[in-house]
Length: 104
Image (cartoon, rainbow, N blue to C red; front, side, top):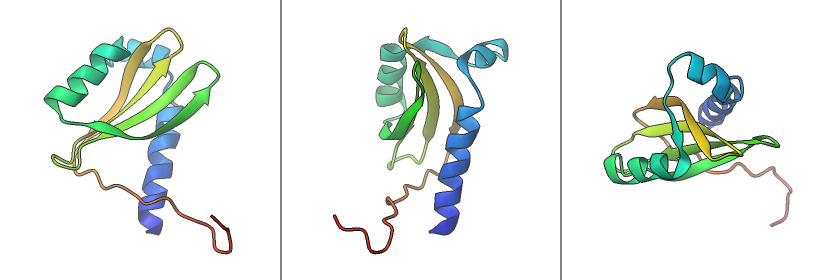
């Protein structure tokens, strides 16, 4: 469990360090979010697995497929442009950790 939690933290940390402007300079794919989501859903059978706000103008999303094990990490800017920062295989979902003694 600890390894999975650490892996998730590393993925979010790596994505946070790769802003879209740098991603474009490195040749990373950037396209409108609607087009990227359609491609992830149809070609790779991925669906949302997690995400959060990186800043006031950027959101990090992780999409994954439990069927194929593929996953995609991308950053979406406020203007709707999404840039892929990581892709991979053998995705393993992580259950949310609950602190002991917390109600609810």
